[in-house]
Amino acid sequence: MLTTDKPTFSSGYSQVNGLKMYYEIYGQGKPLVLIHGGGSTIQTSFGKSIPLLEKSRKLIAVELQAHGRTKDRNADLSFEQDADDIAVLLKNLHVDKADFFGFSNGATTTMHIAIRHPSIVDKMILGSALAKCNGVPDWFWDFMKQASLENMPEQLKRAYMEVAADTNGLQIMHDRDVKRMVNFKDIPDEQIKAIQAHTLIIIGDQDVITPEHAIELHKLLANSALAIIPGGHGEYIGEITTIKPDFKESELVIPMIEKFLDRK
Image (tube, rainbow, N blue to C red):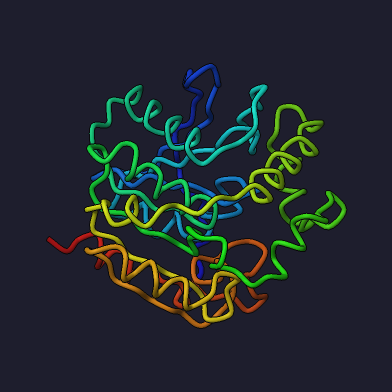
């Protein structure tokens, strides 16, 4: 049965490293931080998952620099800066330790949080994480070098325009995301191996992330489990660009995520 009631939540802005970062808080319980993908908002990445996850968790969902309701700062995007921004946000919210669920670029950011701020990370879920340039097919990098706003998925463009305070920022968000990916650098093996957090790695079997890369990450992360789920990039959480017209909540991986988070 589909959930039709929209979850209730509180929202706000927090001063974070010179940026007013937007966040939403749902539910009660142990904090789980939700970190969206590139070009996305909270809702485009996690809109289908939040009503299920909030039943047993306090969800802290963020929008990163230049995305959604968070404006740009006069600086390029970096995964390291996003990680530092989230660490400060949690400090401002008086959250000392949390679980983290990052999707796509948000999963790469989650890894950098575990590398740069290990004391705040309990468990982490990496949805379609990229840690190495060879983790995607060669065509991906050629596509990024030629990326234009016209080719950005319409669902993501609409979602940005619906929530952004300044809709002129769409081009800026697009260009900053593209530049970050074109300049993507591998996360060194030694930094990945140093992560001690218990980790669940999830990709789709038709994901842009290759199964070989997910297996490599699984081998590098000592305390990790790996799940390869039928479907495309983010389809397993109901991400807006890969969701099917006949979507059913039962197809999502939420029960597996909850089981992982609840394991002692």
